Image 1 (tube, rainbow, N blue to C red):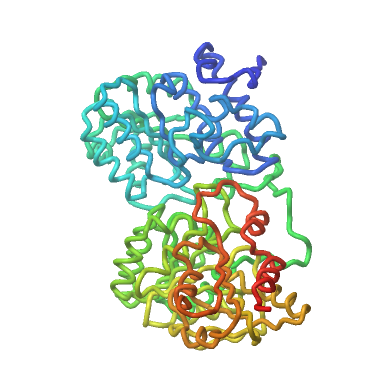
Image 2 (tube, rainbow, N blue to C red; image 1 turned 90 degrees about the vertical axis):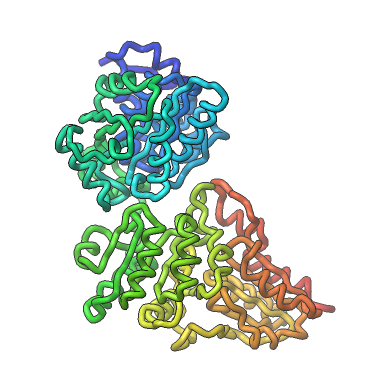
Length: 591
């Protein structure tokens, strides 16, 4: 069988020179290379394997980069990167990390936006199309959207406006009948109807919006894709091309286990088994597992308890088996964080006990609902924030350390910061059973820590700090996961004859001024938090002591979009290791 040297593909122009008969071979070579990299390196597996043919066809038909393509979710763009000058990052293990997992304009002119979240491609493309029309351009504008992104509210807004442009505006809907897990929502029932009727059903969401519509029943067939894209190229009206692809195409284990292989760590491509297992005898439960297991026990006696996810059930520990066990007490609203948060308000108002689990990086999409529907209306819902940490996801599109400043400054929203699993479970149980206030529990980053000796109050609604260790002259306040870190710093200070006071604030939305007042007369108070300094907890403490002689030093992260950083190196650069914290304290003791 003829092969193609992928390292000679430097731009889409190289594939446009090929006979269409060779494109199938190109797809096979790209897919084989993708599997080799993904199995050795990890990454978004299923989405990219399913989009190989569609991306080849898009670049074959459209004159990129003059023609504009916006990808959503851009975690399905590995094949796009492979044929736009970045092939070495997929063929050479020494260069696997040369590219991000998402579109990134700093890498290539073919990447229009840094885009790692979902649902915004249609809206972004509508802006490109409008700019083209205003400036007299003639290029095609294409939005590619898939993996459940249509359920996001801004996707509907983009569809709504895009239909009114009256000029060239092409939306490619990559329909693989999946989000991260299974799809949820009425829109996907319509997509299923369109698949089952070969695109001929009278009930057609896209036609209802005002788009012309083309259906490609086998979206992994290059010839069919090229035909459809040629039909809409240079069109003078908004049009949707609906393609039915296979998520995980070409890797049997990924085709059979689509949810598991949406994103993977390194794995054996023959069996799908992970290459890096956990050591024998080690407790591998995560905070998500702790929540999910406890939830399944609680609903046996509390039928009003409801767990809600926005398209990411794995984030809160709910795989297929647990979802089945939870039954109607588990709700997946699809990729629609605003729906999840506002729905929780309605559930609480109706007497239920909603618990919404979100990844930190995604909760910002629902800021207005947190402020208006939850806090302003005083609805006693519980929100669990996962990956809110410098020790979580580290791509610039998926950062998890902006949430403390974002949420703790909303009036009436109680933001709790557990430092260990005992504290987390205590806060969770209290919040699920109280009707006083909306509660955010910000899960610590890193591995699950246990502290059986911790003091646990019965009520977390009042600002009451825990004085973990009493000392003088130096106070160390560790927020959440940084409590054990400042405790280690206190141990180091003690070895040098300095007894520091160590404080666990437990929450960051209100100051315990009575406890802080006991620190007046100290030489230095140091706060350490797993979030940005601007608008964070430490600044609240510093402001409180503004007219006091005590020196306050705030340790935290810079307000920056950091990209693919090393967490340990970042911690060190911010002066937040135990050794650095101890040294800072020692240097600021009045001699």
